[in-house]
Length: 457
Image (cartoon, rainbow, N blue to C red; front, side, top):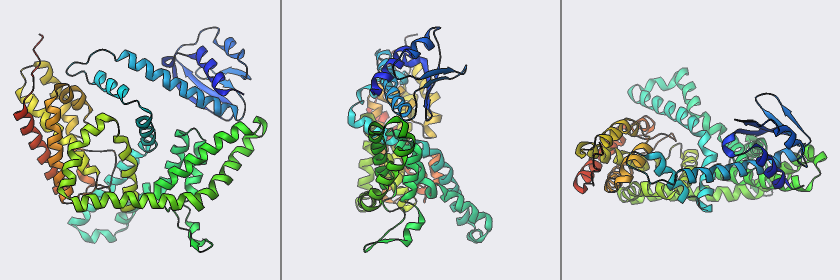
């Protein structure tokens, strides 16, 4: 059965991509929410070979495909919709961006960065993005408890403090399950199978098992091992779906996927993941501890160009691995200084510009920039102006040097700017680094100057 052909025919009837607001599936059905439904849509769908029936519930359109087929067709259909949607956005953003037109410039940069390697990095980062709220909640909880304990060390023996410590650590206890779930989903497998494969290599019962002369270690290899085994499970599952007849697919595919991927994970992928994970942790900590301020200067200064190139996604699993191994990431405070440098550079633009529109754009974007959301400033102010972007990099470099010199670490992920301070192990030093980035970014932008846009009014 040609799943790609069925998916394309369904898209030809239900598209374009803008008309498809939601895609999901169950064991037997592709489920769609559509903005518009022509009167003859249901009849046209029923004529497609491979579709067993159509059920319109009013809000949801259910296309009945059968066990196994529904999963494969949904995967192909989602790829078609994603591809067509990206193409439509690229066409709509073809106009030349102006100052303050951050969305158009951002769209152009994303279109240029849509290479296979960068798209793979983006796909990899997408596995971890749903976990960011959990890292924020747990990281801030840990940070607040640590701050409270510095003022009164005796509270660490109280029940409420110990309960809070458990709450702050819960994301690490359950992280491998979520990562396995998201990895399988991202690579086209059944998410729950990825979750149980992540649970398998993390199960505390492994500590009581010895294979040959090797003592099994629960969670060995951290998130790297989970990524490998869940991706392998998705690959095996999709190929089993092609080999096993649809009538047996519901039972045999999940069983064989688990029985094949599980032993490979325990015997091969855990040791491999352990080696990769330890190498990443050692490389990151050695670079910062031995390179000190120089390493921080380079990383902080290059972070904004790295974001422009679209390869910043590769750092997300590194942050998560560092959090998993050490309970904090020493890279995030350094990289966060790029945003602080941008705040300083943008404030210099605000002070020097005579253009009311540009001044209003900076004024509206500065508060969120201070809170760690830098996109409005970078795409609406510094990057279009040119020289202030370079000034922001200079500010980030000096701020990064401060963070690395004192090895400041953060216990959260997904936040930046001032809110990150509460999760760091050296709050005052982190804030000193932020202030350094503000000041040097401002001075650099003031000295470099910029071509002030003419006041069109």
